[in-house]
Image (cartoon, rainbow over all chains, first blue to last red):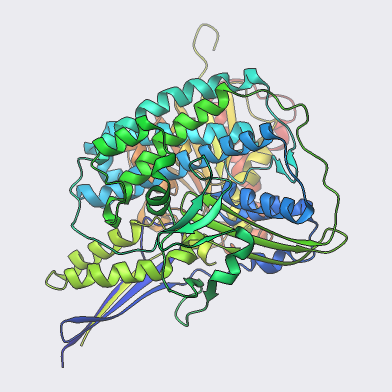
Length: 429
Length: 169
């Protein structure tokens, strides 16, 4: 019996620390284990006993790339527990803030992390020598997103301006002027980036995912909507734990989430697009068509195009929201402590982010649960890897490693968030 | 300096103050606040190192301050001129984010966006746990790095330092 193990000791160009082990027995991929060795950070335990007003500054520290997602799921879950409805202008301002995070996070991943895979470069530094304009576009897009986060969140990394009931401070109309100009340019850069990415060579790959995303009555989902799936799931955030299960696996510090009734599922840009393409403006759908995206994309290697479409959308949506902005009469609605349980899902750049908090009568957190997009995609990433590794069996080990790493990056995993980078080990026996 | 453009200098301290010795960069910036000559901008960078490439546009000289992984002597200060040379492999960052100082510098070099002079002060750390305090050796090194940067800034700008700077000189 011939066995072989392929091992990648450290997966680069993903956020966090992980390794990959592939066991090959008699020419067949026998086992795939994406092992996240970043230590668990126990944020859920850290939140216990804290006042509800402290939560948003704590959860913003979970991730430097997507702090807004944690703040948005957190604030909506706490407001759900406290029975707070925010004013419409505050809701619009939160959507605008989320646009900033989608722009900066997607731009970083598309240009700096994922594009080198398609163009045959080891990293963005090498790619920049031959694709200077594309990298400059990526940096400018990222800056436009960060500028929006700085204006609304107080700072780009771990922002501090979101509070239960609204914001600590809301900007004046005049303060949007420089950001508005930056976003107009960013929208053009985003369209150029989409057209650039559409020229990449994409490996053939079709996966039969169950897509899970939020769906809103009339918006492309960010801060609200029901949890729906391509297999007919349609539930409120409060029912999330009825349908989904987080479980431990012995080889990783990250939890793996499954649909209790059907197993693995995919969240993120591909799922959002598949389930909500009709919520995109016609001009954005036309650009997606021009880029060669089908209404439902099942090739994970083409996820880079979906993210690029979402950047175009987020720039346009941000401009729409700024155009309609009127400074809210009050920056926040008051929040009084009361006992209760609150639930919320929002769409982080990497997909559905679930938060649940149980508050006591004093408003302190008795119990918290946070389920990250990367934890939800772990099983799908391993299933993708099994398919990609099988298709790469005749390749040498370096080529197989490259294909596997690209496959992982297809889903832009945020390992730090999930643990709570990659070593690839292939065992051939 | 009258009649000549004053050099524009940026000092950027990189790191996370909540992770032990990784807070070296922000700690040095804190020590420099109110002490640097006119024409010098100081900046804390807590996570998005790539943004530095845009932050240093227009500055002729940039000094970055960062903690380094242990190489055998906690608190040892390394001054490196990165204008023409990449950061040595030994100092490549162990960043949980995909881009550290080494990557940002080399990306800027590829894009032709390096400042005319790029200096790095790197201090070997010993503990980077969440919530950990500075190790004593790195706390002392933060003072010494701030002193050396003030001397360097004084020489670069040719300007008289404002009152209070001499206690660091």
